[in-house]
Length: 155
Image (cartoon, rainbow, N blue to C red; front, side, top):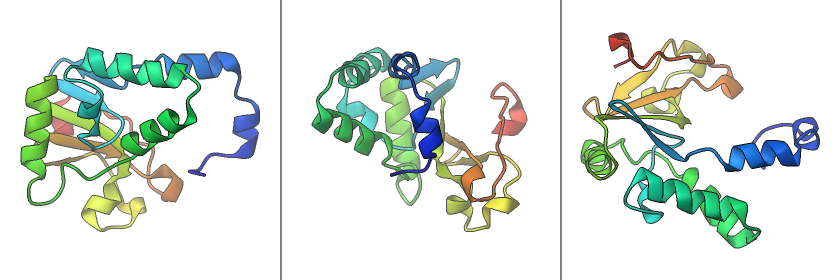
């Protein structure tokens, strides 16, 4: 439904699913709050990264397809930190979960800049420096970005 190839899904094992299901959804790494997507929906699962991670693991560890779908919907919501009030939304999320900057993928940098994904050369700092988009849009011809977060040039 959202990319990938059938051959990849056919090779997916229970071990892979277990590993993926056990990963954290929100990680505070020094000054950076690492999130999959640029959304504030994480707060619907809890008030701390630990609560959020426990709640997401519980959903993914269960077999309730409605909860799985809701998890997917929340984690694929985007653009919460863009626009007129984006900096305030990012600031509020950081105040709640910790950190000084949100680092996220999911929303391709080119969607923020209005340029072709092939023109992306590095991460995009926005929302008053409170958000760093790192998805180069490889599926659309953009680069696969590897971003060193302790490097001042990333912000």
